[in-house]
Length: 149
Image 1 (cartoon, one colour):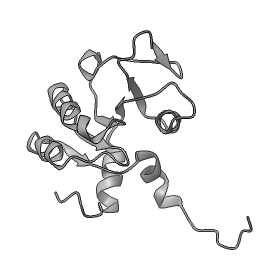
Image 2 (tube, rainbow, N blue to C red; image 1 turned 180 degrees about the vertical axis):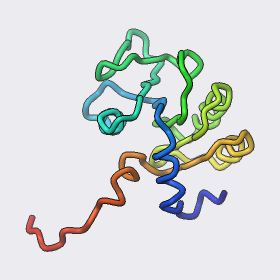
Image 3 (cartoon, one colour; image 1 turned 45 degrees about the horizontal axis):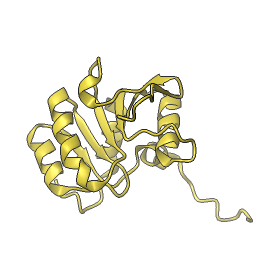
């Protein structure tokens, strides 16, 4: 798949409808961080969220058990969402393949075409440079240009 081109709505919606368990690599306990907000919304929407962060002493975020790595997770994972630097995506991809995840999702700004190719060759669906929280609600957005600020 050419990840420089826009993803079709059906591709993104198909992924978001098919996954239930999402491991978020780079989840943060800091309420001001974007990853915290995405974790909160996806969890409140009904996804089984698994925060992944190797920070010593970090045991939970929003009441959810934090795992130090993908390999440490004790149940199947449908999707691995990546809130890390683009240069970290290849290592996360290898870990996602090793645990049998079905989807690799790179958050906005997280792009590595070689990692995407590796994931696809392993049978995974891949999304890069997108936010599942935004994509989840995109079909319901309607501009309200008549409102004043």
